[in-house]
Length: 245
Image 1 (cartoon, rainbow, N blue to C red):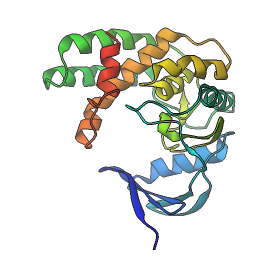
Image 2 (tube, rainbow, N blue to C red; image 1 turned 180 degrees about the horizontal axis):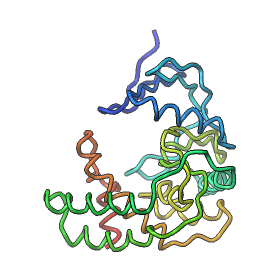
Image 3 (spheres, helix red, strand yellow; image 1 turned 90 degrees about the vertical axis):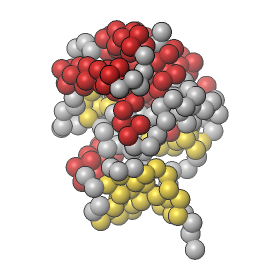
Image 4 (cartoon, rainbow, N blue to C red; image 1 turned 30 degrees about the vertical axis):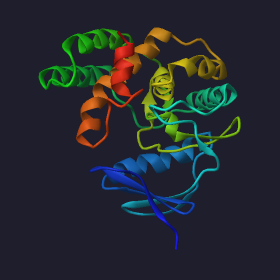
């Protein structure tokens, strides 16, 4: 009998692993539609779709291991991080998906609302929120849209040795800012940004990347708390905000 392992589970969705098969269960089939279409379009390695029977999507496991986990030192080599940067560049250079991403106004509105909640709820000190809100402003500028993964956490990039074997979890793919993907990939692993940029192969505005680090952390904290995750764990979102000070 194959062991059933819960990879992640919360009120919105759950992912289980049974042997070499991942079962993604999502009550919002729009997200799954995006994931399936994005994987079909992406010019980078993605998991094989074994079958789909809503609300379940079955995917084959990728070879290798994740680039790392937020809050833990990444075991991957500098060459592997650079390879991840090259894969991201290949995605960004590909044709846009037909659906748009979020606008600057939508992002700014969400940021304002989450900053207000963080302070009024007493979750974070006002000075920490205010300073990072200022840093986040650098990200809220016009950009040329590219095909972004949209949730390119290092746990979603799999490597074997120094090679990228695939990228998972495409449900937030859309048109968006290239530097957002680079920021999410290096969130909590700021020391790896040089390796990623070297693989990406073009100049990167570091102030904008820092802006996305702050923005992503500020808007994620309430969701993480409400879904049973700990943004105060060492190396995670609150530590990222403290580094922004």
